Amino acid sequence: MAISAISSVAAAINTSAAQQVGGASVAPKASGDFGSVVVNALEGLQATQNQADNLAVKAASGDLNDVHDYMIAAAEASLATEYTVAVRNRAVEAFNEIMRMQV
Image (cartoon, rainbow, N blue to C red):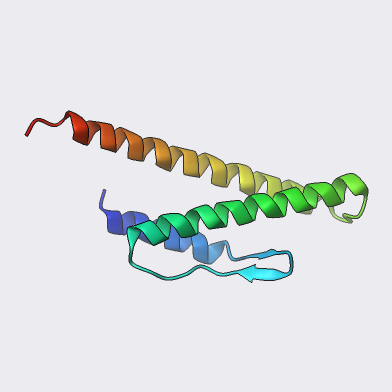
């Protein structure tokens, strides 16, 4: 799989996952650099987890009117974490395979 394919998937995820965190909008940054795509994806993951945490606190304190908002945010955070772990595992597997190659 080409790196450009990974960046297009990450860009699609970031554009569909523009979120409200603490009243500020988290917008994706467009760049062709693989490192910045990874950093932006991790920042998006952190924002998703922060949003779920904030809604969990509101739900526990009784300030949240719609509990389904928290459930949706928690599911999104869980799915984003699983996706990130899967990408990391594939990257480690690819690195190990490259290191086993005979030159």
